[in-house]
Length: 77
Image (tube, rainbow, N blue to C red):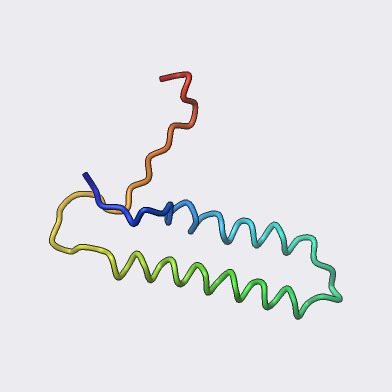
């Protein structure tokens, strides 16, 4: 079984930029400074999550690492 970090890091890596981009759609032109800081914060969060993946990657194994498995529609089986 592939090791995990106990946190859905791959899903978070996808959702952070998407949610930030969605939030940036609703920021007015008058708040450009805030938009830049929000984008920078989102980028740093993504960078930190990527750094976790890089530092926890094991080069000595042959199986897939950092796997997330979720049941999308449980009643289908």
